[in-house]
Structure formats: C-alpha cells, structure tokens
Length: 555
Image (cartoon, rainbow, N blue to C red; front, side):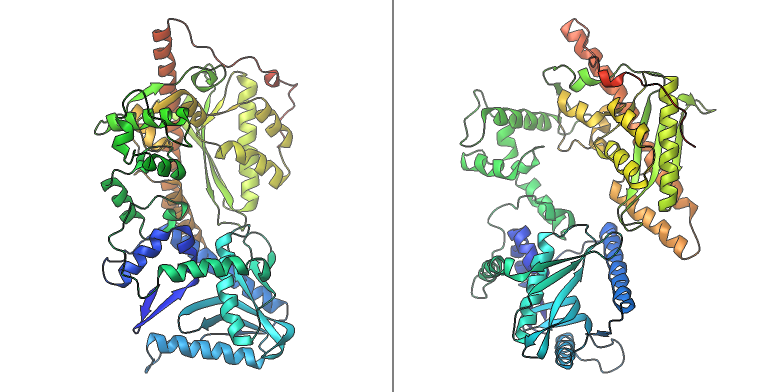
C-alpha cells in the first residue's frame, strides 16, 4: 500500500498481508495518512531470502531459454536523463507489457500489470493457445517461489496477477503456475476456477477495510495479537511494544490466540490479571479447567521472575520415562550435539556443520574437546555425515551407556533424512534411533518443569545455569546469514575463514549449553530426590537398547 505521485496503489502483498493480519492493513493505512511512521526493517535473513529468490528466478529464466522459448522484458530499461515520474514509469511499463501481449510474445519476463489502483509484477507470462481479445492465444502467470510446496499466499498473489491479466486479454487464464524451489524446475499448475471465489471474497473484505470514506483507524482500537507473519513484518517491533505496554495475554508462554480471546471475553484481559488470579480459579467457557490452571501457573512464575537474574521454576508431577525420569544415567562417553544448516544452499538445503562437545577427552587446557565436521557441498555433506555417524558408533561401542544430547527435534530428525538423501549409514542410523541414543533435552524440560520465561528456547533458559557465551548471542537465522556470506566470498574467489570461525564458536557455545543444561537438570533430579526422600527413577529397560552384534563402520 503506497502513494505514488498522489495515487494510492495496492499490491498483491497488501492483500496477502491483510489475510495474515488485519492490524497490518490498519497500520499501513495509518502510515499512508501520516498518523504513524512506517518503520524500516533491516533483516539480513530476509535479504538472503530475497537474493536466493532472485537466483531461483534467473535459473528458471535460463531454463526457459534452454527450452527454446523466446523471452522478452516487460519493463523498460532504467536510467538516463529525462526519466518520467514513478507513476508515469509504471504506466509506461504496463503499456509495454500490453503491447508485447498483443504482438504474441512467447514469454514476457517481469511483466507489469496495472489497472490504475492495483499493481503487480509477474515473474513470467507464458503464452498458451486459446482464443482471447489478443487473437488465438492468451497468457498465464508463472511465478518462482523458493518454497518446496505451494503456500496459500502465493496462490492469492497469482490470483491478483491473473485478474489484472484477464482485463488485458478479455478472458481469465485457465491456470496459474508456481515454479518451486529445490532441485530441478518443478512446476505446480493450479486451476484458477478453484480459487477465484475465495480470492474475490478476500478482495471485497480488503476493499471494505480500506474504503476511502472511512476515518483512519489509529490509534488501534485493540492490541494486535502475534501471528506467524510477525516474523517477517516491518511492524513487528512496533506491535511487540504495544503488547508489552498493554500487558497483553500473549506474553504468557504457551498462550494461544483463541484461548486469549476467550479469556478476554470472560473478563481476564491482561497478563497480570491471569498471573494474579485467586483461588478457586474461575471457569471460562470453552477453556478447560486444566488449561486455565496451567496458564495461571505459567503466568504467575513469569510475573514473579520479572527482574530476577535467574527465573523461578517449579516441578511438574513425576511420570515414568518422562521429564527428569527420562534422563539416562550420566556416562563418561556422553556427547552434546548441535547442527547448523542452511536451507537455501545446494537447492535442497545443506547441513554444513556437525558439532560435538566431548567432555570425555579434554584439551590441553582442561576444557572438553569440541569436534566439528564441515560440509560446503552436497558431496562434503555425505562425507561429514558418515564421519559423524561413525564417530558415534565407535563411541557407543566403547561405552554402551553413552548418549547424545541435543535440544529440540532438529538434530534427531536430520539423521534419518541424511541417511535417506545419501543412501548411506542406514543400518547405523537405525541402530542409533532404535537404541534411543539421542536424548532431547527440550522434551525433558517441558515434561519436568514449569519455568518463569516467556519462551522455552535454550537461549532463554541459559540464565538458569549462568552460561557465559564466548561469542555474541545470536539465533539460528544469524548463522544462516553468516554462512551465506561465506558462500558468496567463495563465489567471489576470496573465502573468509574468519566467518567460519565465528560460526564454529557459536555452534560450540550451543553444544556447551546443552552440556550445562544437562548438568543443571541432574541437579534438579537431586533436588527432587531430597524433597521426596527417595531416588528418582531412570528410564526403564528398553528392548531396543539390546546391542546387536557390531560390524566395523564402513569407511
């Protein structure tokens, strides 16, 4: 949503954004009216995503040309003196696209579609047979997307383009095409008739929301709820601040939007309100008493932990083989594992670093050994994966009681995927998984404890065990950005080893954090044992842990 030379212009992204979050449309309208300043969001990960998307688009462009199709540009060259204003340039580009369509161009690249209010830049218009106002041909939209599967937003976006296209050629295209990311040039085609009714309904609702005669709705009548689109939205920090100022219910860890709305309807409207509920807890329609109790206890702990250097925690009921009772007996050969992956590299993503914190073999200075296996190509990935699996198997052979500790499901899930992708170490991975060598500390935490933190990511738990990181705290997305920067220095012929060293140090901190979290959880076992007066059980016998006869790892 933007004003160009005095004309308000909408785009497909405005329609998709409205569907994701109506508050986004409200904020954009307010910014358009000068009531609030539209923030600039500098997100290096989004920049990487955009660059990878442009590379994917160029590859498909080359693919079309290799197929013998003639491609023409749907936009005029930029630059030079005497350039018209922006709106005039858009109109000129739209006229060029329309002329190329009338001339019957085979493929129009970066086609400009504009009806005076709605503007769209379609990646490709593909000529197909079928009568239209253009003659015996018409055009269909093809858009490139990095995703491996088609998302609803992409289809809605192409409905906008197709609707604009229909006005130029006197008929609606029959299909729209999505060129998906990943290996090859996989194209999914969708019948427009399957989506047009929904598209028109959304567009009518959007038009009503931005109707010119309505007063601009700012400040907001309510506080915007967090949605998945917040992760990529320019207004994320603005809305986060609004939620904090409003003491919003979404500040409670694990609070669902539908539950928050039901609590508000029952008069429980803020984080502080649910944190300070008295007993007995009130009943809320369509929210179970158990859910109310859990959310109240979580909010209470967060409320009491505010301002403390270490958050408070409380124990959940002990269950066999769950939580603290699922922690195996520590063993000298235990390993603490974390992986780094780049979803944009090598078409289908690349697991580029396997890191292991190994306390059993200290370095000369007494610190645990930190082992790494790097992969900068698909072939390297196979070698690194094999070497890591062989290392684990050898350690298991030497210490049958050892385990591999990690946080959340990513690392364990990658093992089966990599074995399948490369057709290697399938037997060993099957043994490892059936033998339950991998221990997910996230599952242990969630089943054992309630903690006064808003998020249960491992980095939010580190104050519990006072972890001091050796490198600045970042998230997984930051590592992706750094690795993408490294790949670009290779392409430029000047790889920077310092980038890899920074990623290595970050990964080492993550592995070390797993080790210290496990130690802290063992301390909580001791604490609970002291309270109960009896030793907490360990995981029960598992037939799958019976070791098969070992064969030597393949080299």
